[in-house]
Amino acid sequence: MRLHGAAWLPATMMVASALLGTLEAVFLREIGTRASQAQILLFRSGAQLLLVAASAAFLLRSTALVLHTSRLGTHLWRGGLASVSWWCYFMSFKSLPLALATTISFSGQLFVILLVGPVLRERVTVPQLLATLVGFAGVLVAAGVWDPSTLDWRVTYGFASAFMGAVMVLITRSLSFTERTETIMFYMALVVFLTAIPQSLLDWPPLDAALLGWLSLMGLSGTLAAWLMVEAYRRAAPSALAPYVYTRLVFAAVLGTWLFGDVIAGTTVAGALLIVGSNLALFWWVAHRAPAAR
Image (tube, rainbow, N blue to C red; front, top):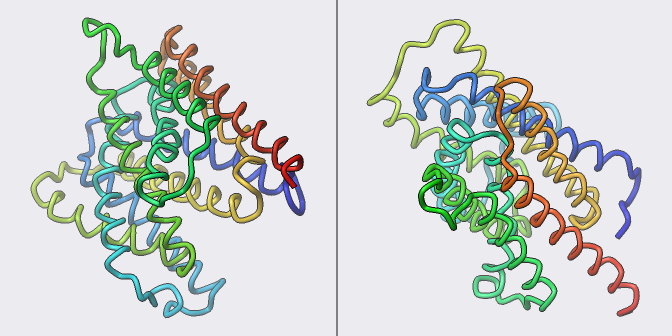
């Protein structure tokens, strides 16, 4: 499946999103335990609220367009999921090697395939099911679940985040038919921000200038990564952008090794190859089958 319009633009957006998403994880590692999870959630969601507000002011010329919705309950439900999913996501990237945490995060795409049938009543083809099974095998290999003696229980953060993220993807798909991208991003960030406030009252370590800088960089990079990904998918089909999504694995491996001395396990490499290979094979099959079916 080809990229529509200027082919370089959505591809560049997706690669930039992958790099910024990896930098968000790098900043999280730098922050470590010096900031609480509540503070991290506040800065990340606050940055997203600021970006949406800036977009409303300069691009949409109206905040009313962002705030207007007839599906407030769905937004609140999605925001609640995001609050827990983000918490687990940040714990995963703070405590695991970047390459491993990134590999596990890709299981979210596999959960989407498993959930789309029973939730949205969409038909799942045999190739999709096979690719999903191979992909999950890759995730299990990367996590090392077959050996309880060496299993790092912190991988459960990544799996929990990926599963809830998959549910959020399905909700987002439903919302996208009636809601603006800015509206979806605004209400999700608002709920995360509000739920983080009571947490912060219970756990607020002092923040020095350096820590404030890391938190600000984390919030900005993560928000821009999400924004660029949304914009890339608006300009090109997911199958055309699939190869660029997985550049994040390369960025995570390089930056994790260079900055933190992460040792990339052979199981992580093998699992990543299974995940990426199964998904790219599926996208290739869909792209080459579609013209023949017409």
